[in-house]
Image 1 (spheres, rainbow, N blue to C red):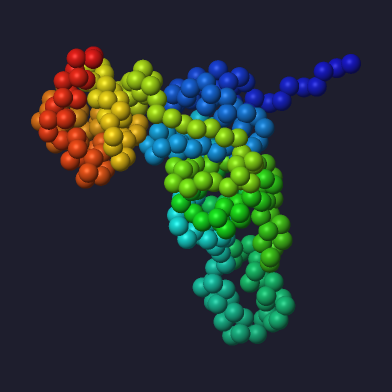
Image 2 (cartoon, one colour):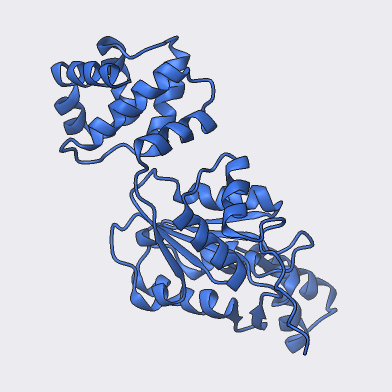
Amino acid sequence: MSLPAAPPAPFGAASTVRELVDLLARHRYLADPSLGTVLFLGLRLGKPILLEGEAGVGKTEVAKVLAEALGRRLIRLQCYEGLDVASALYEWDFARQMLEIRLAEATGAVHGDALAAQLYSERFLLRRPLLDALTADPAGPPVLLIDELDRTDEPFEAFLLEVLSDFQVSIPELGTVRAPAPPIAIVTSNRTREIHDALKRRCLYHWIDYPDAARELAILAARAPEVPARLAAQIVAFVHKLRASDLFKLPGVAETLDWGQALVSLGCVELDPETVNATLGVLLKYQDDLARVSGAQAAALVASARAAE
């Protein structure tokens, strides 16, 4: 009795979680084993992946790196309050339809049902991100990023159930559109509100937390190699002490990277209180947080960070 053939590697040469993590690292994304496992299973099983975590921890970057490493298109649906089906799925090109009607009236070439059939054909269909992701692509299924789903309302979230469970949508004038192969769907949420259980059940779930100091230092070295090693160590130590503070919004990894690049642009080779106070707005985005940290508190954090290197 012959054994069934092994399923194809879901990520090029990456046939194991370890190989996938290594491949992501070559594209400068340092995933821990638990995130690597979720991504590997999502690719192998063809299931959407829901990533939650604080802003700036690298959720969106996962989709960007997957697309880059696979050589696939990245299709991004940026969510916001009031996002509707027309903006996310499709619209009819009303201006072109009106022009077609006027041409038909002028020439008398098409009437009635035949004209209606022409007006509601693929030629007049404006594909928005979700429908675009369900369309066949010679390069392979695209990476569909549904970013910050928590910003939308519950009716839109309910609409996504069909898309994320069957990778199909219904267009009244055309019928059901089904993806020839499921897109690689990454859904992110900053958890400003809870995502409904019905949608979570359709996804593999992972919470991306702030990295520990060693991993964040490695991320800084990979993503901003121009930052000197000594300065990078001080930056990471400073940021981790900030995250232990009582702040309204803690700085994410994205802010760490931005700060490192900002300090290098200023010619900084190590942290000093004056430069830190002048650049705190790169790390902190609320006035109350800036007021709490500026001055003596910043100087104390600098001293502690330099002592910890």
